[in-house]
Image 1 (tube, protein in one colour):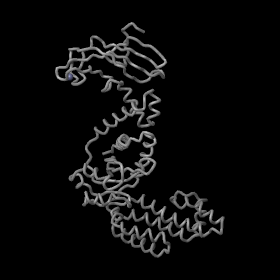
Image 2: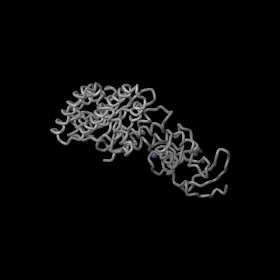
Image 3: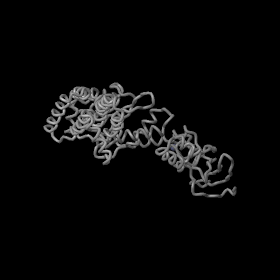
Image 4: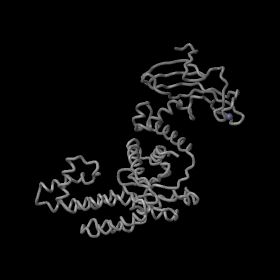
Amino acid sequence: MSDGKALLPFWEGFRVSDLQTSPEGIQISLEVDPGRMPYCSGCEQPCAQVHEYGRRRIRDLPMLGQPVHLSVTLRRVACPTCGHRREWVSWLERHARFTQRLAQTVAHWCTRLPIAHVAELFGLHWSTVRTLDERRLDATLAALPPAQPTRLVMDEFALYKGHRYATVVMDADTRRVLWIGEGRSRAAIRPFFQALGSDGCARIQAVAMDMNTAFDLEVRQHCPQARVVYDLFHVIAKYGREVIGRVRVDAANALSHDKPARRVVKQAHWLLLRNPDHLKDHQQVRLDEVLAANQSLMTVYVMKAQLKALWTATTAWAWRRAWKQWMSHAEQSQIPALIQFARRLRGYWRGILSRVRWPMHTGQLEGINNKIKVIKRMAYGYRDSEYFFKKIKAAFPGNP
Ligand SMILES: [Zn+2]
């Protein structure tokens, strides 16, 4: 095909002058329609003064399973405002190395597939895919309205294998990820509060977080009026590890002379950690047997349910009564792991009581942690925190 007139609807203002296939894919030559008035790509104003002609190699979407390379004649205009500039073309992205539809499609697939897969799918180098994705992320984040959070959720997560951590701060009301940074120390999260500014800090009313972090001290320093709310999910997970886990091991050891009984206790571990409402009838029977066989397990299991209930008290008065009751049951339990847990928990009472006034949703943390795992898997191997953090922020733009 070389009649010089072929107008295909994919490249507005240009005609196909040649089309060839080769092992590298489809090569399409495009010539500018001579009747088309050039526009400056700097100011997008018409500019009749053509300075020179040049050819550019531009990637387009694959066609019929083949990579598509365009060879395009582009004019450089002498713009009175901008000087010498490439002419503006509606279907070209900013740097004129890709068509907009390729850039958009690649960026779209980067939200669903790992970079390496997208690179293979479009026949591009992974660094090119990353650049296109990062441009989309920058545009998405720049278009977000300014955030004015009043309630925050803070959490940490493992960044890469080898125990490097990152901290994420989310707006509890809009579910937008406001900030994300490496580390989990007070100094690591300070830039968030510095960026928020004194007015922004003064607006914060409550902050939900895990009990055992450096976050609460930093929050108190920048937002002294804000209430710290300890997260139920983390406290219950800790209770499972330190109390139920310990008692189960002790029970199994105590039964070391009785192998079948010991096996029952060991296998019952996951039953104990599950929500009793989700247990099937035959599982319930087994659980009943195991619990009857071990009074301590029964006690810590009941105490777990009562601990959870502290997060659903509707008045401060009801909360205080339940708290005192839980603490005295723990003290009287004669179970060392439970007594130790209760004594340590005692110091955190303010942050647990805060939950009555500030019913923050702990499910938000679980949601974001799952999504972070997925994004981490997709970006695996690139170890580029800045890009990874942008992906997380863009995945949680919030719903105001
Ligand atoms: Zn211009």
